[in-house]
Amino acid sequence: MKNTLLLPHPIFLICCMLFITMLTSCGSSKLITDDHVYFQNGTDTAAAPQKQTVIQNGDLLSMQVFSQTINQEQAAIFNINSSGNSSMQGYQVNDAGNIEVPVIGSVKAAGLTKEQLQSSLTQKLISFVKNPTVTVRFLQFNVNVLGEVRLPGTQRFQTDKVTIIDAISAAGDLTDYGKRNDITVIREENGKKIFYQIDLRKKNFFDSPAYLLQPNDIVYVSPNKTKLKNAGADPEKQRRTGLFLSITSVLVSAGTLIITALK
View 1 (cartoon, rainbow, N blue to C red):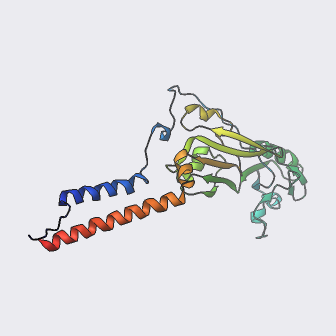
View 2 (cartoon, rainbow, N blue to C red):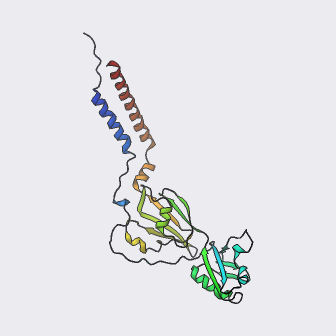
View 3 (cartoon, helix red, strand yellow):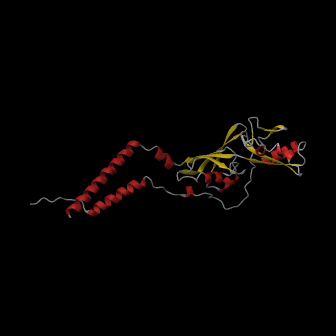
């Protein structure tokens, strides 16, 4: 009586391979839920209060002074970029909250809006420039976006108004592991760190004081449970699972080759 080699049925082998594929893909699959949807809850439309951006210590400002006359020479000394000094690109707000303006001296800037500083400078310049007009703008508006975003780091804007949506968009939006309901904005106010919590799923976040960002704000996106679970996975368990899948894959491949050779 001839010995017969009993081999698994091809259909069984195919099922094993499909099962292995499912196991390896389950760990990386992402479930999209309502937690990933922005601007839920509420249908009312309301104008969110727009808080003016406030100048802070360390900000770099541009100041352009013009005279409402044909004689602009009297204003030239106050315009740093046109003064021929290429090493100076603007007025830096020092630790005391002031900017140092030629002829005038120290001018309080920190704690004021652009419009308020413009008004203050205009009054101080009347004695030196006939019918002065002053324009102030931010030369640097940096926001640090960290955590579960696609492009973490410092985001730089050439504008005076930046919202949290602008910052997140510049950072490539949240990853699938970012918690839409747990975003922290860290802001320094009067020498203290203030923490604001933002929930992007709720429309009322437009009313938050942190909706309109301030220069040098930090926006941090917390990781969700899936990311934390993956980060804290047991390495030994992962090694055993990988080893089991590898051995099973080798056995299935070997069985397929043997069946093919015997045909």
